[in-house]
Image 1: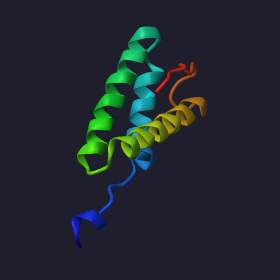
Image 2 (image 1 turned 180 degrees about the horizontal axis):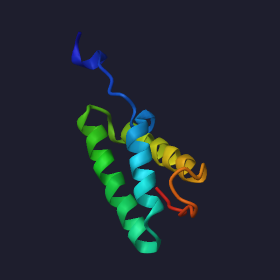
Image 3 (image 1 turned 60 degrees about the vertical axis):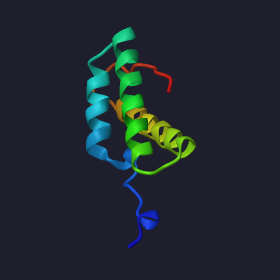
Image 4 (image 1 turned 180 degrees about the vertical axis):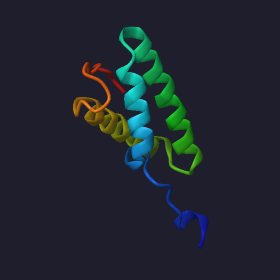
Length: 87
């Protein structure tokens, strides 16, 4: 199979990663939560770009991941308070 036909599993569907990030965010507040999210977003963007996606597609994938984390937080499975973050 040629490399251009191989696609990485989308990060927003990696439930363990979504739950892990949501749990971490659920325990953080204010600037600490914002700093954590920004660092994680940069890390994930680099990871997705490294897997062969262009920057625009990688940014969209990180946004979808952020929404999955937000859903996890609002479901109340990781914490009672849901921080509001921007991607």
